[in-house]
Length: 339
Image (cartoon, rainbow, N blue to C red; front, side):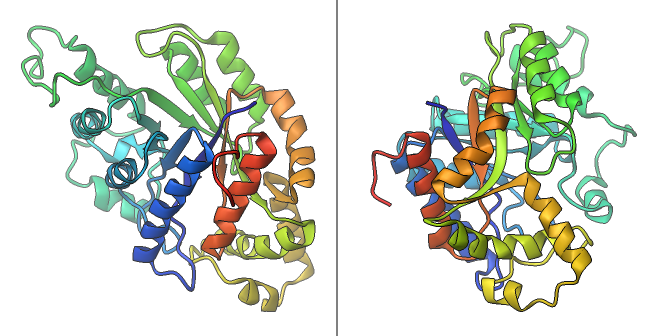
């Protein structure tokens, strides 16, 4: 049985304002906890009308408090947006409050546009270029306390200093993060739902080149996919039409709230737009239980994930919960709660 987890963006729809989207995330997390999902990760995005959560660490605390056993984490914290000490302190606090249930997933991207990125980072020490590795090393040093004796941070502590940093996961959609995660001996999560790189190549490379470390003794690769499941293929296609239109607009730089099914069905698509939607569907698994499992089986066989993490974006919150219920049942974990 492949473990299942949830990746949540707290999606905003044309009928669900951001504050309600955040409350829906807590409700969905409770549902996933009852169904037997392994993790519930929150993303970090800024200034996007379609995503309600810019601060995953706040949502992690709320969701961990509202659930019983599911691990809760970031998918991920965009490390270049933050001082490593602040990340260490916040996640040590979460680990102290919810021991053994917190994950620290880290990403390299800003999670926003260039202007918003500047607003987020304008008062940082501008080191220039891609400083992700430098920030990652600094983050780990707050845990290992291996700053040299003459280093200015040698006597600075990330509090609470009696609590370990949660497990670190590197997120990626290319081979770069898989290589880095393997070299440093950390967990790895591959974003198949928007990657152009081959998932199997990244995940097999990670597993083959993994070096045990103080962070993790054995490799653990998560495959993140987009999926919408319903009782029938026709119903799943109808529900997914919202995501189809949203993706089409997003590819044009229009980050709008997720439209309703009625809005999607009324949109005057051109032949070129319908072709673009068909191409985008190659990155999303839509259908009944049988259809989705048949579609996903070759990818799972090729990439051999230790865990599958699913992002499901639907206009209707109950349809999203139903999709996760059906997925849990299809993967053999949905025995603890009725749909």
